[in-house]
Each structure stands twice: as structure tokens, then as C-alpha cells.
Amino acid sequence: ETGVTQTPRHLVMGMTNKKSLKCEQHLGHNAMYWYKQSAKKPLELMFVYSLEERVENNSVPSRFSPECPNSSHLFLHLHTLQPEDSALYLCASSPGTSYSYEQYFGPGTRLTVT
Amino acid sequence: AQTVTQSQPEMSVQEAETVTLSCTYDTSESNYYLFWYKQPPSRQMILVIRQEAYKQQNATENRFSVNFQKAAKSFSLKISDSQLGDTAMYFCALRNAGNMLTFGGGTRLMVKP
Image 1 (cartoon, chains in turn blue, yellow):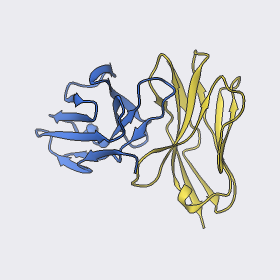
Image 2: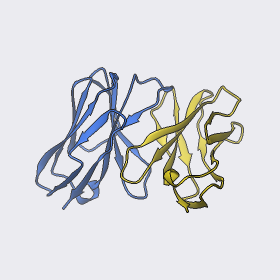
Image 3: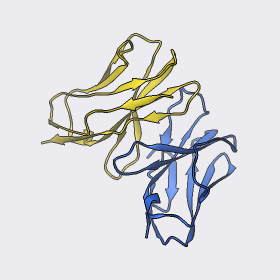
């Protein structure tokens, strides 16, 4: 395992529910990322945080709301999602945001919106 | 904008044989990093190998090596002596200083006993 954990691993929610995904990294990294992995589509970067500040927001709908309270934790708050939001949501971390750094991924949360 | 294309959605190889996964990319930058990531079934994505564009020598990590052709914007991954544990999705990715990591669509590799 790579030191990045995600909970829950599976989540089923209705379109009117509110839920949160949690990511924690134990690697001492300063940057954290949320990705969306849909079937038959490349991984899509959603958000990037560096030292707890958001540095990238890739035109993500407002029904996805990230939160980074400290450099070890990252949340993705979900509300009024659509069925097309069903996907695997991956969290990753890296020592910093330099383009040379490897990203370390968590196992993902499999989200199903009904 | 930068793009990464993996033209082989699925591939298979017999155990102990060699397989090459293709990747082409496009970027206007002169310096960048290329990565191959592996995502085994129901397991975490991990880095397989990385190549800096300024380095002409192809990267090698044990049974994994790349063929980096900068002029052709090609970055293929060769897996030698394939093992059952190599069964996974493989993603090619690109990153330069001005952009975040861009992934290709992936290649599903099946190693057959």
C-alpha cells in the first residue's frame, strides 16, 4: 500500500443526498489531488491543493466541493449529484506540485448515484 | 494544451513473453516528464517508470523499459518476461511545468498463463 487511504471504498447515494469522501496521506506530502475515473474516459483532474490552498479547479460543477483542512487530509463534499457522476474517485498526493514529482494514489471510492 | 493517446484499449500476452504498450503525446513544451502508471484490478495505481524529456537515455526499471522517441512524440512501454502480476490497466501520462498531469485512456493488459 502506498500510504494514501480513502474512505469509504464504496458509496451509493441518491441524487438528493449529501455525502463526503475522505482522503488521508501519511507520507508528509504537501500537495493533494482529486481525480475522477469514469469508464472509457481518461482520468480527469478535479482539484489540486498545495499547502492547503487550492491551486487548480478544473471546471468542476459546484455540486462537488473540496476541503483541505491540513496537508494530510482532503475531503470531497458531494450534494445533489447526477447519475453521470457515478465513477471511481481517486485521491493522490505528491511532495509538492513540481512536474517532476510522482503522484501517490489512494485505492479510490467507487461512487454510484441512483 | 497537452494530449496523451493510447491506441490499444486491450492487449494480451503469454506469461514470460514480451509486450509493448504504445503511447503518443502532444505538447508545445520542450521540457516535460512522461510517466507510466499501473492500476491492478481493485488495487491502487502505482508508478512503473518515469522519463524526463531532456534525457536521451531510455529509462529502465527491472523488467520495464521505455522507448522514448522525442521527435515522434512517442513513449512506449516494454514489459519483458511478463508475469501474471503484470495484469492491470496501464496509463501513460505527461506533465510539463505549466500544466497538471494528463493521462491517456489506458491499456488493459492481460497476462495469460
